[in-house]
Length: 349
Ligand SMILES: Nc1ncnc2c1ncn2[C@@H]1O[C@H](COP(=O)(O)OP(=O)(O)OP(=O)(O)O)[C@@H](O)[C@H]1O
Ligand SMILES: [Mg+2]
Image (cartoon, rainbow, N blue to C red; front, top):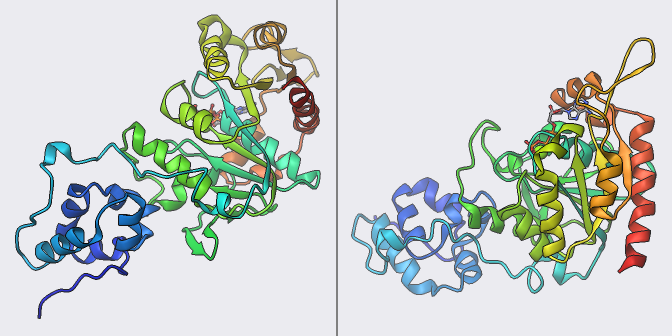
């Protein structure tokens, strides 16, 4: 009996059952098969999102599923592998459709990798949540996501009436992270920049965030696709920059600050992470060198929100997915200063 693929079938189901149709989707300019979010769309929905004609796509899908050659596929060299999923963030997604329910959107960034952006994002979120605020985290590190792991969240995405349901941490923080979309958390995401950008936009516009006081966006290191997308496409209030004492020497943090300024963003504040280690006798050992907090303040014109110590317990809780169990005065101070700085930054506008 001849196979029949219809418009209401889910892309993921189609390509699972008929793997040969992947090239049809891609050839027609629909990269959803590579995207765990988009693949949950129907064939008609995917075609609509990418402004494609449904009929030729369906015709080719059916031809190929039935062992024939496709007709409407463009040459492989033009396959839009890197074009990503086009989304009109302001116009069409769940968040936009139901009005602005997120009070503040803040990105956490740093020019350099491994300075503690994800940790600061996670602990800042936890501190704000403990103060009775509602908080979400959008893990903008698509290729190296760590937020779901920090909170021990491993929920496969499901679609509710208003969009993709985010996961909830034990403390009630809403989380969306690429890891939640991967069959195995060790699977790599081998996407080029535009695909990464599209996923970030979808995480914002297609997720049912509900009402939030804060949406924190954890960014990957550097100043390219992901930070640019976040700064250009999301209605950001501003950026928190994370630094560590030794990195100033490399001028990397300055690149990051200049990028924010060039893109007309606002630095809400700066966090100096790994500033010191508390020794058994209570003294502070500045193992990465003396604090550069004052320089950071001069460079950004924004306040130093906190100097955070190195604490081995953090790494342990992160690995165990129990970051919310970490309590420290330094992080509560960070959250308090952050809220104050946000108000001041608003007045600077
Ligand atoms: N203050 C700290 N005390 C102890 N461990 C820390 C501290 N800050 C960060 N770490 C640990 O250092 C590692 C890197 O931190 P994290 O993943 O937050 O950095 P990142 O800047 O987000 O990295 P990437 O650039 O790869 O996204 C993690 O294992 C984290 O648990
Ligand atoms: Mg990170």
